[in-house]
Image (cartoon, rainbow, N blue to C red; front, side, top):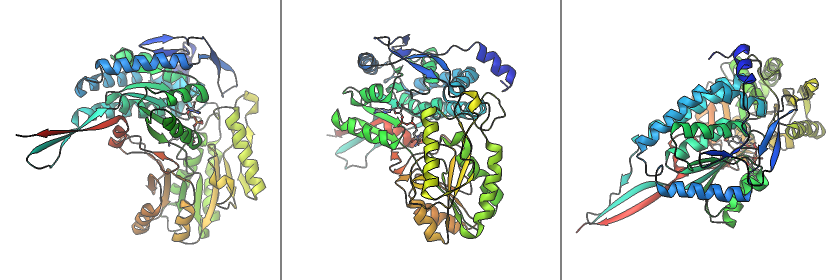
Length: 498
Ligand code: NAD
């Protein structure tokens, strides 16, 4: 379907806003019928009320998920059969692509162009990729002595809770649930309280695709009650979490306080993007650098938020990025031509504004932007902002702002560039721009980050390439074969041959 105003308005006018818990194949209210207001950052208006999962709802859901795991209808299904169901799910995501895109746009404020042309196609690709690989992976036999045969097999871990953030509501959920489901687990999804609607909607789609009841559930709610209760639950085997490092550390504590469940963490970043003066195409580098911080309103874990530029090209390069930022202003999220939309909520908007003020107090200069904008809409919008004269020990260079705020720093030589790049508690991603292949490879080896982009920055997202962090950016990986490991146990079977 073409992304036009006409099609958008047609689907929007008939949209049903999902609001219920999804348990055992059915939509249900929470037991005490408690709900919370779901507010759109596009105009500040209440969209609907979402039922709020509490301890009793969680206990019931976990017992249904465990029962479904134990009865084996899904966990023991041959991989080739599981594949068919997930491939069917992918076709249903495609069928409802505009509806799901609109739910995410309305919930978290990003543009319909982003949800429809990026989040949905990449989510569908991810489901298809995991469906397609699962019946092509073999287990191992050990090279033991002739007296024994050692079988090294993989089994689903059991009941997985997937706790996800709001910046790519459906996409981040799919990164967990596609590999967790395809490996035979039962999955309980807890979407972020800011963006629960697409997650709730996919419960029905997975049932329609043929997933047995109880295998997939959705529990909307907040972090301190719903998220924490899931993490502390003694009958959950794994928490797969994407979100802030602060909450990631709590998830690790909850695991220790309960049943030592496995924890996989995808957390924040403050990613360096290094521009060497020998970069062969400064225009392409400037465009990618601007996109790396202003795309998705800067609400991106791997945003290139620290631009580290070689001194002799500082002014020329930052001027190029500044010029490009003029065309990256926020606008109506429903306009298919808008580059950026709303910031997720007033708390996040205030946080961005607070950091801009901190940056000024720290002595950095606002080169471009720096203001809340489009106040007349009643929604949450912030201008693309560029700081100059930043020192790497400033808060704006060290802490994740999670908004369209670029800090720019300079360096004189290779060693200084790498030292600044690594001087952070995070290690999620980095960019390196140079025409010297030796320099590029040395930089990639020396930068402590899970992903290094050479002469590009996040141009393509690919289900085949793992994504995750060094240091406090996380534990484990999403995407690629590597993500399957999060959801599998290794079983060693010793057979004596007589
Ligand atoms: P957040 O940590 O506030 O919340 C993430 C999820 O955790 C939400 O579902 C929330 O309800 C839940 N939660 C909050 N408190 C909890 C608690 N005490 N126990 C259990 N669950 C709890 O993060 P956010 O604001 O939703 O998302 C932004 C963060 O996510 C940023 O730091 C960003 O870098 C990170 N992120 C990382 C990746 C990645 O792949 N590394 C991708 C996207 C976002």
